[in-house]
Amino acid sequence: MARHRYLIALGSNRRHHRHGCPRDVIGAALVCLADKGVRIRRTSPILQTAPIGPSLRRYANAAAVIETKRGPERLLRLFKKIERKFGRRTGGQRWTSRVIDLDIVLWDGGPYAAPHLTIPHPLFRERAFVLQPAVTIAPAWRDPLSSLTVRQLTARLTAPRPLSR
Image 1 (cartoon, rainbow, N blue to C red):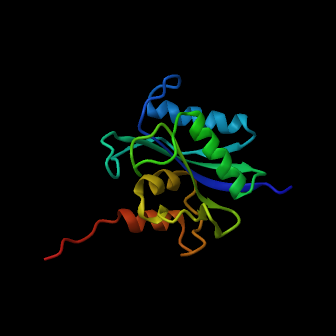
Image 2: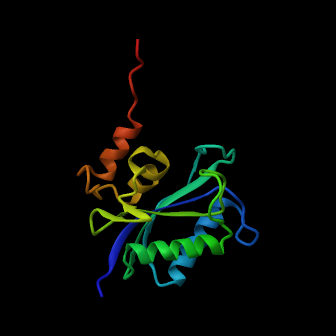
Image 3: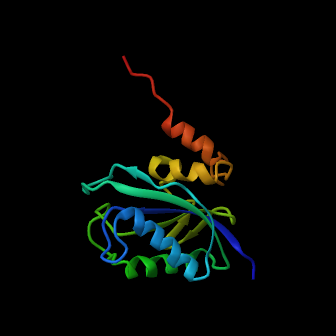
């Protein structure tokens, strides 16, 4: 069975009763993935970022390049299982505080679409909290839809904009 490479995003903005602060929750999630046979190839520094939506707590965000025999849907099921193990509940309001959020951003198989999963992640090009960690570990990885690299996407998103007159 072939192994696949994925670029994933990790985020947390709530303490966990056992793992501690959001930064430590991200580390614990990576350990949990490794315990499930996922190879962690590279991890970004953990960044503190402002929340989107109704949450008031700052986020710890990171990215990782992983390798696994799991296809996208099997990996998504593993992510959801880990999120539940860490106390995340399904449903409710979007963008609220959460103990852990695991997202598939890109994979080596190009575009992918299923009822509950789209790769590339539909919003990753607009999210500095995904691109800034990702550029530190996968700057040359190309978005299969735009053909731009993570470095180019980050530059476009974070470039200073002239003030309108």
